[in-house]
Image (cartoon, rainbow over all chains, first blue to last red):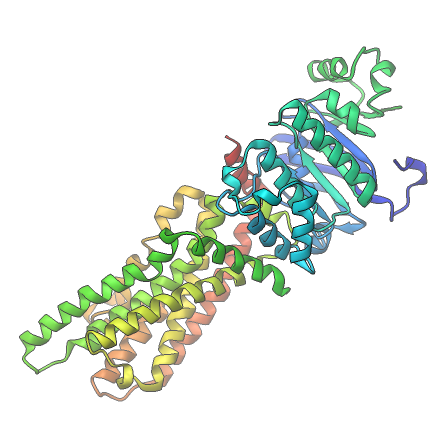
Amino acid sequence: MYAQDNSTSEQVALSVSSLCKTYSEVVAVEQVSFEVHRREVVGLLGPNGAGKTTTINMILGVLSPTAGSVRIGGIDLARQRARALAHANFSAVYASLPGNLTVAQNLHFFGLIYGISDLGHRVGELLRQFDLERLRDTKCGLLSSGEQTRVALAKAVINRPGLLLLDEPTASLDPAAAQTIRARIRSLALETGCGILWTSHNMYEVEEVCDRVLFLSHGRILLEGDPRRLPRAHGAATLEELFIRLAREPLAEPLERAG
Amino acid sequence: MRIKPVMGILLRQYYLIRGSPVRSLPMFAWVGIDIVVWGFITRYLNSMAAGRFNYVPSLLGAVLMWDFFTRIMQGVTTAFLEDVWSRNFLNLFATPLTIAEYILGLVITSVGTSAVGLAVMLVLATAVFGLSFFSLGALLVPFLLVLFGFGIALGILASALVLRLGPASEWLVWPLPALLSPFVGVFYPLATLPRWMQDVGHLLPPSYVFEGMRTLLAGRPFSGGNLAIGAAISALDIVLAGYFFSQVFRYAIRTGLLARYSAESAA
């Protein structure tokens, strides 16, 4: 993980500045600012309705912010949408790949959308990397949850993104499959140098994988820090206990840093 | 504009059609049945007319051209609906794909699927029922191009409506060609219509095609200027439909509609 004070523009995979989203009278996200550095896994935590998916949707360019800016690899998303999104990719439990295409067809389809060169070779590489070779001609709609997660991850790294957004990537997996996926994602960050923004409700997983976490509640970042040191710093025994406390009684101060 | 993302949209549609008879059959089955039904109707009418009038070019030719137009429109809309049915908007639009690349992919897809339908209709109409487009000569090409342009425009408009109004609105857009057909005089001159319907008809490019076709078949002098007006309206309609789609897309991004389209799949 890169230390914050050493960060340069080359090391910043994602920079979110004063991001706001308002629907009529409802404030979904308010003044959210953070960075994700290369080779860093940042956990975006918070109770249901805290604004995690809204934030991720704004970073993905499928929801425009009311105010604020998103820069992916230093490129302003609002001004150069296509160029910025070429450096990002994502996997979300609620955005499964088309079930009427096979694994290989989905990878070829999205590979072309991302403009990948030597696509046949890249697809073969991903099929091997994610243990999908025997499933290459199986329609994605027929795969188990674990297999679908592996395909979604293969698609999510097809363009070798500098920024990877993972919205509850292990939500529907059994503990063994989840552990394998976590290890694979962790090694992706280290090997490819991409920055990862990860949402999860599994605090054990967050402690294992994330270098840093952001606690979001009512659309605002309440806490930020090392998931292994934050609980003690705030008088909680575990990250889960801290999560529950924050979810039930949001801190008065909008932003604290620890760890 | 990049070519690879456009190829991606085409490739996806090819994969779907190749692996699915329920997708490939409608490309030629319904238009084929239409030609057969209307072919026998014209044959019957010809026997009643006892050589005084040949109904084949005016009726069967009109059916063929109208079916070509509807196939073009449905080709665009169906390719778009594949993303609605598979809840693919989030995956698709969180990529570098631009709206222009996406629409171009839909249009080229429609060209391919409609060409199959057109070929089947031409073979059936000429080989079985003796339709000859020689009487239209080289004007057949601009006639088809005007219909093609308006079919594309209507397909893009229908896709934008589904994006704006939600997946269930596909039932609203399928009958759009049928809704327009009374105004464009597929089988009768525009002069048959009341004044207000004629005014609407003059705003629709197919009117100029079917009026022109009837003029040629009747051996009357043909006005190229009228067809040029039809072509110009057709081109303008494509631009307007593209603009409308991009505005609806912006609205969908601003309001969260695009994200919700996908979120429905999690339910």
